[in-house]
Length: 379
Image (cartoon, rainbow, N blue to C red):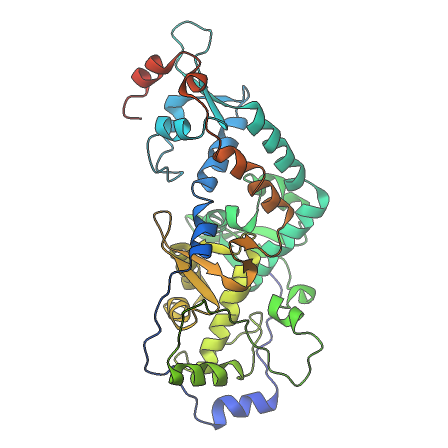
């Protein structure tokens, strides 16, 4: 069992505020959704990037650095491919090359192009460097510290592997380097999890708290960035002003003693959601996955309600076949304000550049187009 504690003791004046006075709830008013083309583009330009990197890792993990096309077709559901494997590779000929092995009667195979292999090597140098491993280990630690139990199922962590910037083989290449941070545990008879070995007080400071350091006596407020043309009703603006001035409870404290339908509880919910968004290297996440994580953290429908109530903090895009939550403060138009090294590989000059290159079909198939189509019909 992990040995750690979470502080649930607040100072006296906050306790009186929560329990000695009436606590308001969100006003009865409609908060409209306004489309933001910059954030939509920030989401749309990474369309299929997760799938591309997953397929790249699958191919490069093979001893021959190639994979039969028919094998990859079986991963369509696993990797959430929007179309058949053949059509997907056709769309990105600068990254993937389909070829016919010289061995007679061989099935068509897929390999990385030289440009894609170069990017993979650059990416690997970052992922497996000592400094990056320490950074991502601390990010993973903070995620576990946001849970009340200090642990999560491994399949849930794997779901956020791309967003956290974890290596695809993090169980083998990252966790063994940090035995004093993590240990594998049994969640139940059919599920393994990852739990903290100990609570790390030096990491229990939120990004918002760091940015507010030194401002004593001033309430910690969330950055608000409403788009042009967005007009909140007057009573919502008044509510927002008063809500911002409520005490800020760190997401690394336990705020579940608060009545869940109060403004103070909502500010705590937003604090946790805000900190989670800062742990993700692209500062955006699929809404469905975020809400599922909220269930594991014990928030139930409160994450969903927070997204609706606070459009100046979170933007929800409807692009690329899903809904994506974007942390507004982390972007200037469609560009990340701070771009981690790994995001520099993903965008804009490396993967993004190759994803948008157009190559003639005859170069893609190396003269085997008809045979490929026959082998993978419907794949």
